[in-house]
Length: 479
Ligand code: FAD
Ligand code: AMP
Image (cartoon, rainbow, N blue to C red):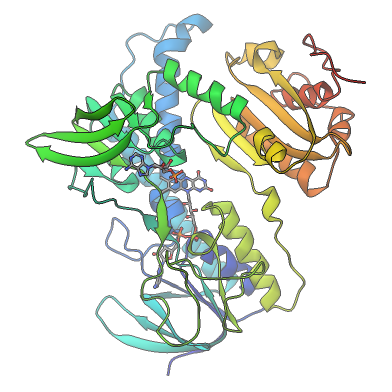
């Protein structure tokens, strides 16, 4: 038997590493088990988010957006930049450096907070034991009073499009292209597909996105989703809704993809194909059979609102449990669980978790959209403000998009905020705070916003709920 801990966390993604640091800060003897092998052949912390998710994708989105600005927008600002070109290898090297610094930073935080980092694959073998197998196949069993499973998720693979090294890739593979593909196919127009499709579209690929659903971004308010679709189309993304991929074949250096749409069976040829059809929990083998931790048929670990599994003392958080697969949701669950283990009261507000798509412009939302509120039988009033009427947006050369607030018609309570526009991902924090504090649209309308800022559009949208926006002609509102 190896060491005994108060808490052992399995997985050092944004769920697990945050849970471990919080637990250690609260005075609990904590270990975190991780098996992810980084590019240098050593175990690295940070999980999907830091290694192949949030951070590397944003590094490429930022670089490719700056490239588009320099190539197409600088002239209008009076900047003569000459012939603008992109060195893809340098862009990728910068991304790798950011990943290396951040993942190394987690190891530093573990040391600073007194978290014991254990390298290897963890398996819960009883409610108080974790068996860890290291890279040489050696096993050790560690004891803990509490266990937190934060095993994360992996991309879903579908039978019509088996992965083919360097040709048919998942989201991680799409972060590694060393040159710009001429014809790029993306299956799935969800959050990850739109971000990765945008990167390569900006760098010059002809991007075709095949999406089985008829509705574009059904979780986003339909007015915002419609505007987003129009804006992305204008940028050159060929988004084909109602197109279900049924097969693919690699022929030499090309991939022939079969799909069905309203016109019947179709075929299209690409040089590279990215499969972005969602993610699934990575829980196979994490829990030994027969110890009583329930998993559903898709592999999600069953938990209650406080992330307790069916076995006392065993918790599960992040992508491997129900709810949105988002880094900040995983981290908040990690903090909640550490607090509970330390004997504190802790809750999550699952109704106030923001989502962001880091395209340009960004799309961000929190809470209900108008169609959801109406379907739930709630009478709503809404206010929207276009960035085209914002002084700061004009100065920023970013007049596309709008901010929209959905409020309860009777109580004026804010039910949701949905935004498409530059920095929407930063602005949405206001909506999160409004939901957390149970604020009314009037509370936002009576708040003083700095001028000139993009956030003034949120202020104006709140004013527009009562038909009182200052910088636009208001729709007639009922008294
Ligand atoms: P993970 O980050 O998947 O971490 C799980 C960790 O557990 C991994 O390190 C894994 O190696 C380890 N592990 C698993 N099993 C074991 C075991 N048995 N023993 C030891 N270790 C184990 N989310 C956002 O909020 N914002 C974004 O902008 C965003 N962008 C994304 C872009 C892409 C391309 C992708 C793929 C995802 C993105 N996500 C984003 C989603 C985000 O990455 C996940 O929601 C988040 O990483 C989930 O955190 P987690 O800790 O639950 O799991
Ligand atoms: P997300 O879950 O946000 O990552 O989005 C994944 C998207 O992939 C969803 O919108 C699915 O409808 C879409 N999808 C799944 N399977 C297929 C398929 N065979 N062809 C086209 N789109 C698909």
